[in-house]
Length: 384
Image (cartoon, rainbow, N blue to C red; front, side, top):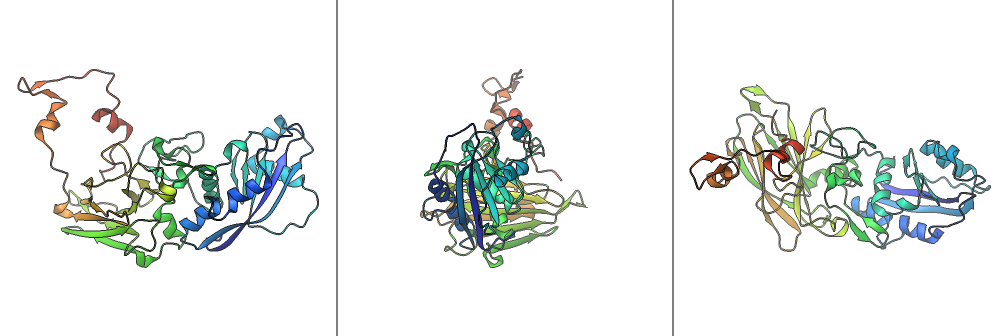
């Protein structure tokens, strides 16, 4: 599937014989998919690709009335077969060979991608949903967090699926975290991850800082990262850190950390604040976004990610006032340490410090925001 140049879509609007309503005009559908400067899907992919991919509309046809009602026979069809029923209802016309086809039906029934086709019912006509399905057409998988269970088991049962709040391929679960905003065409955002932009060749190698940590190496260094959607800023748009470490003298499988800076705005307007995002990639696994100490996936000023097993720590040192870049400290080896903790604060939830060390024994149900509950919900990924 092409990831550069022009990618053309054909839009076909289809009505069931027992449903006369038209939920949008053909012009509305064309503006949603390919309007320029309107917050359309074309704008989205132009921004994600730094201008390398142009999603345009080759033709719009409809509304056409299909010679059958919305019945159980249609509902039982697979998604591709549903689009084929719509296609078969078209009158003879010159099919111009679009790379992808979008079928919009006029009754709530089913929506999603099937090969190079996307089926949309009236409940799915919003940028977040459509951008996700376009990602599938381009060959993208879902994105993941470190959870041991899926966020939408009915759609993807793999652990952590739909758990990345800073990537469109987790729509529309996003790990139950804020990620979207209301745009002209409805729910929109978030942006696409830096690693996917690199995969498609949109993020040049020279804009990625690479750091390698070997066994026994101790170092600390500062790196500046430009906001991912600010291609004009210098120098790096992503940092890749690979650790080849030892645990009790035994080599660990290499771990790679992909670090990017996301400024609140544009397609990331739904973020609570500017933040650094960290994803972890282990051989034989999918990339997984790391949860922060504040029970979200945004690493903000002064927050510190630590992987003690691989001896890597990443600290958000500063965020520029104009939000163009962030500075991070990367510490490795003996320099990778957990943040200094107050003994009083650490013990206060277990002991009554006003009466010596009289132990407090909590009984269930445990508070939803307790340390115990958080560990059960988001088990740490810091062990080899």
